[in-house]
Image 1: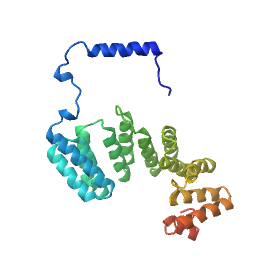
Image 2: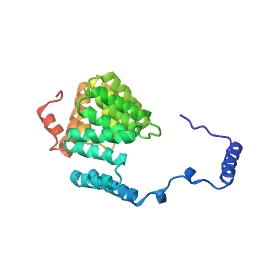
Image 3: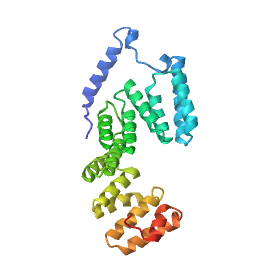
Image 4: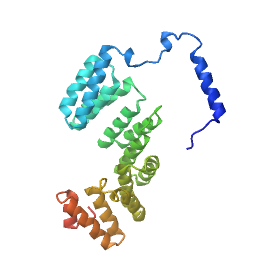
Length: 265
């Protein structure tokens, strides 16, 4: 969608009006914009702990991340972001009940937090609670200011595919691709769904976007490409992608399936 652009003169007038408004008199405290200096020491400690927790979690150190989240909540018990992250950590540890409690608490504190809604939706999908998951994904997409729609549409599409709703999955992943055509994760998920629907030529197009760049391709994308070429009757393509798979990822489950000829598993 094109951005609405004011003519230069109108834009200057608008800017002048805004600047004039800034000089009409002192601003009362209740109208001040909240900045870092307005945070209490407890809030600052909580956010530092939360940043540390996220870093540890990103490195796969779930227990250490959980300790940092606990310290963040000790400093600021109403920090919705901390409960959101705690839900992710518990989910990664297989603690489903604790994860759900954390996500629900995060949403009690911030009902329209797009990130928490997305994460809770993905958690519900992993629990095979597909209808509940779709409600949370839709709510995330409707959340004010939510800036990660492509990621949520991808998750929603993958979840719909797991539920066997292939047409709906294709529609969501198509929208995700329109928003972020450079994402290899979206391209792969879209290609996989198209393959499952028998749309082999279209599936080939999207997986080629990944395998055309060696730093993006992996065992999964090469294996999908080989399966697509087999469906299209292109034995040379099957051999080419199979060779790359064996050479680059010889110990992968996909290479093992290739060696066994398990193309349809």
